[in-house]
Length: 104
Image (cartoon, rainbow, N blue to C red):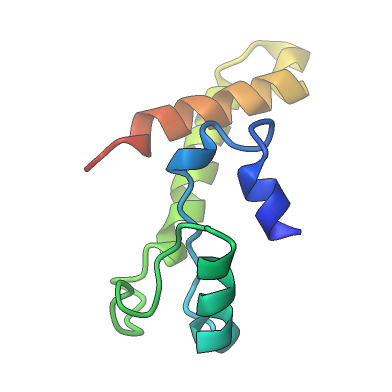
């Protein structure tokens, strides 16, 4: 289910800019999994890129909190019932990704 999702333009802003990030769980570190991602042309952070198992160095430990906090802040700034609309949530996510997306 992951491969079609990552390649579908309706699910991601730009499929060419998607990098699959995992939390270095044993199943994701397995070389078979790494080869499966490579064989399906999925950009990902493999074993050679990920730092050691320090939670301080693992962005996957923090990125969800960053996104949640920014989306929540944007939603709370919307008046009344409109803060709960799907469109409001989607726009808040897109703004968050645009803000943090191209930091090279």
